[in-house]
Length: 255
Ligand code: ZN
Image 1 (tube, rainbow, N blue to C red):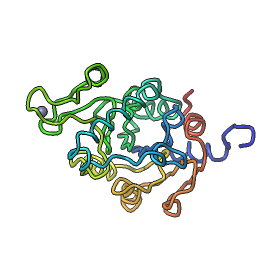
Image 2 (image 1 turned 30 degrees about the horizontal axis):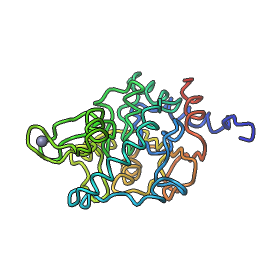
Image 3 (image 1 turned 90 degrees about the vertical axis):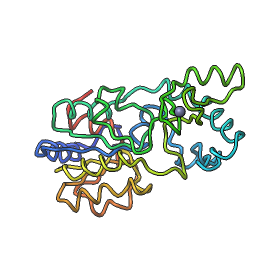
């Protein structure tokens, strides 16, 4: 790896597993998006080591917290808006397009799988999506540009024009319950898989991190491709502590 090229034996083993599989399910975390320039909030030196994340109950309870939450959101917006899918996203998209990849379960909220061309119904977002907002009462979608203009020019916090409810980015915050439909869809997809590939997740945030074990215990092969070792490496058939884009891109033949 000293020359920056992926280890050819590792690529070969991953390619063989992908070729033998018929139903691949991906599980993606921050690591696939850091390769697109999106910071990993949880990593050492990451944003959440400087700013305590805003808990859902505090967001609901306090207008000041809602203001702070939107201020942080828009401070980060340039970074998110500039991010584009990378080779790892493109390799996932190719396998989904070919029909061998069945679903992408993701902890990411950046929408980059959809931006790479994966259809909405194949992306299961366990932690929601930060590229738009929703009314917490009636679920009506609201776009960020309109919210930002009201916030920055008139100091207005968004409320729902239909029901008056509080509007929040469509993400799942700390203290907010996991989305029931997405958890059910993720479990169904996991149980279909004959190959389950973890990409860039340290597998520490439960219940999401339980899916690789469910897949493995259901008979799927398990691959973990993550920069650092994880607690679940011992259960995996193949562990690759490497960058995602070069390794998966080479294994799938995508640039
Ligand atoms: Zn509403």
